[in-house]
Length: 281
Image 1 (tube, rainbow, N blue to C red):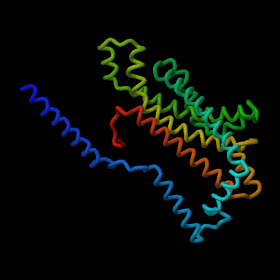
Image 2: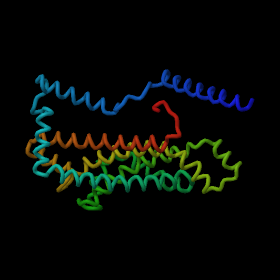
Image 3: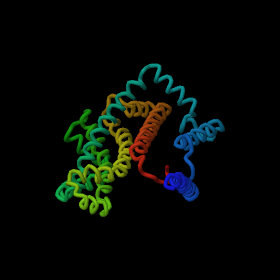
Image 4: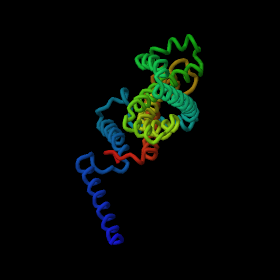
């Protein structure tokens, strides 16, 4: 009897799982669309192509896509795009790694101890309220106009969203989990490792996605402050000589790298949080 009951129980479990998935598709956003993240950008490009071909866009205001593509080819041919792009990627990567690490450490310090929160949270909230552009003059006075200043500006911009979202998720750990940890006799370190840190991962990845975007936004700003290389420097030179097509190439490069970075973080998030069921799954 027990052997016969097992397949029936498994069948019921499979049926209930299919029903839950069907219900989620019916009430939620529906099935995932392959390459869905690319649809919006492709529609923008299509609108750009059609408007340029129809003459609705003034080439002096926004060059046609084929003109921008030709300019990009020329920049690649003479090596200017690659060299400046490499500099920008290095700045963004170094600052992103530093900002994420610092933001995560501060979030853990403030999220797991009251003393840490009292010391750390106030200054972070102050930085959150001050735009990056407003800090650049002060940072120039303190650190000069070299590479150090640029890295510091991007890093301080990146750490804020990582801290804010991770800290909020740590503080939002369900009290029932804390009670359960106390019941089974977990030590504080075991509670942090098994409950608090896994529970903070959704907030951390939300902050990481924002941090990736902000790193490119801050990079645009700092690369136009006495830079001698980088995509922002290339765009500043183009502005001086009225080369709108070069400026658009720079904007496209920033947009592509921002989109690629965000997509990479989203895939990493899905893998790290594969245990979590949501409407997006």
